[in-house]
Image (tube, rainbow, N blue to C red; front, top):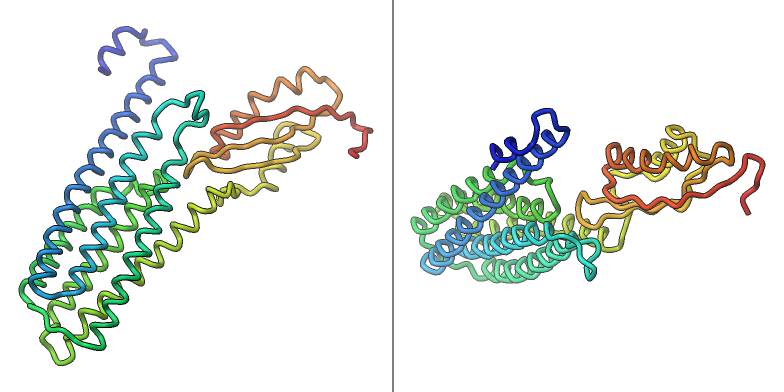
Length: 315
């Protein structure tokens, strides 16, 4: 495909670099989608293995880790589907496209994790009150398999965990589950020591604390986006001051910045020009939009020009 593009575009054409970059980014997206798909299959295998191992060995920590891995499967699937749908072109029905899908999916993931956490904590408390013996070898083998699988999935997604909110959610799931797998392995190694029967439910509770912490941060971020809050990396006053200084504006008013999805920033603002040399000043609007895109990562900016003479007073 790349060689075909080179044949039909002149080497000196300014479109050449643009097409190369576009093809490269598309290839990178497809490679990462493949990694997500592999991670889904890997975690589905871990879920099956841990459910069987948990039932055979009687280990609550294995079953809780299986539930956690099941939410990993859901998170990875939702991340993959959201990435694919987000690439669909905007339509008259959905003029901003489908960027909000990843936010809604992340919120769903958070709610699912909280439900699972509640169920596991309840069972862990029961096990602490009424200890239940577990079969050590089965627990240890299955926990080790789960740990290796989670490590492989973490490596597959490493470096891409900040691409969008849903990928970050999936990566957090996997990272937390890797830690929980370590705890389950340790609990399996020590289950036969005096008092070791309590390590299985204790490991389950510690795992859930990791889950709840990550879920809180993820859910808070998703709700902030849905409420059209200002992105954390955008300081409104600093942005206003830079625009005034950079383009010689009289003022910038009614600035509103929000996110359609993680990393996709949208802005509306009133740009106030001086009355002098009006045509030249209004002609700066495209340059202002480009500045916002490059320096502030604002992908879509709607700017309303206002004219105000130096001696006028705003009412």
